[in-house]
Image (cartoon, rainbow, N blue to C red):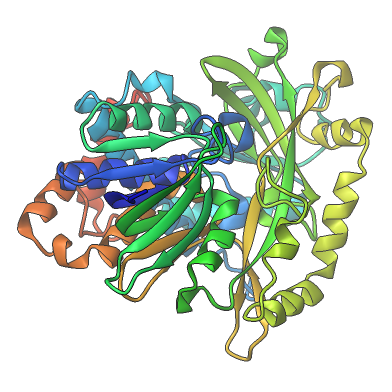
Length: 497
């Protein structure tokens, strides 16, 4: 049986692959693109609405993106980079809405203020310094700050109900924050791809092997789980956008750039409330400070969510230890990822992160009562009967080889690309989906560099992302133009000046 020839094979039916596929389709409508997904429908792992925070991570409220340094100064560079990257996603989504490739924006994104909330004198002092530093930059100029309990009761009534009146409290707010249903967004993006020629979606087709031919093209073997038949694909470029499954696939590729990478899997859970009387009292995403020893993905937050059009409240996430790399993966995933090239970095990272491991295992054994008790730090009058436990998605944090041969645990995302540009993979987790457009531009520049030098591709990229090639961090006038358009197009603009 001859191989199915393609220009591009996208492995994984999540937000990353869908974003890259649509961007490449706009840059060159003649590209033949195949998307392969191991499950029987797309956007069901980390991209699904229940499997992520849906925050539209913009650095507005996530306190772990703005740490204090040894001198006590608040560092905001990471928040600036994340905010600028999220603005790129907003530009792409606006373009796709305008081109009728995405539905009404309310089907996947809704205006939801982003707020940070802290209690205790030390934390109030930190938040005050953070606001002063961030609001001085044009990306965060609209950020408001208050220590007024009256204002706080207006901003977050659920959180202020029953709170100790003597407790020092403070909050910041950005009113044009958003809640993003990445599952609905991705399904709409894949629908747009399917409506165009030269695209094939292969569901229930896990990748069994991939190897590079002498001519530089990649052979990809996939198995049809419904028929048991193995199919062969051949492509000039392969993207591994399979979430936690990307690392094992990257290792299968055998490229030199994959050596030394390992993965540290972390599971997650939410407390969910769908009681309409409770849900109607909270309309924002409120982030606090993480407990000592907790990983960044465990920063507690109480979120308004709109998933598949239905409102809910989520609190968490509660982290846990797992050996699976995917929610529907195998308990042997972690062990199977240990190779000769990464065993030392993985052992080194494990040894230096024993406190984290103990924390995660402790999280697993919490009772429902324990979890609700931590919720009461945010919502003092929370009732156990109104909340249920919901499994969230799996995350695989990056373990990266250090110059001395050891290993370091990284919390973020990273693109690993073959030197010849024929294969790329996205590893890691948060902020992930929120910065998908920025990450996929990086992939295109690294793997389609010759074509990106073409003025026609440059103009098409600027049509999708008007700020392309310029810095939103440095150019305030550009940010104003871009943000005014995106917030208006996506229905997030009611309080924006």
